[in-house]
Image (cartoon, rainbow, N blue to C red):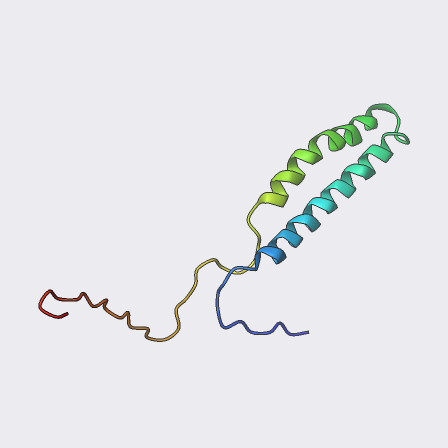
Length: 95
């Protein structure tokens, strides 16, 4: 399905960004659970791989979850030719 075209370059809303971070963190933690379960079934020196994965994954999961979202750019582009209005300062001779 075709993505709708955006008229701005605003970043995703805080709710959308939080949801994407939660999903990334949950995926990493599911991998950690798989590593912990594999510790019960793997024997020999292969046991080191799931142990290392179970110990190191929480650190990388937090790093990956907190990295800025891969959403759209963060710069807001102003539409058309917006002319700033000069602020009028009252003069002393006018009441």
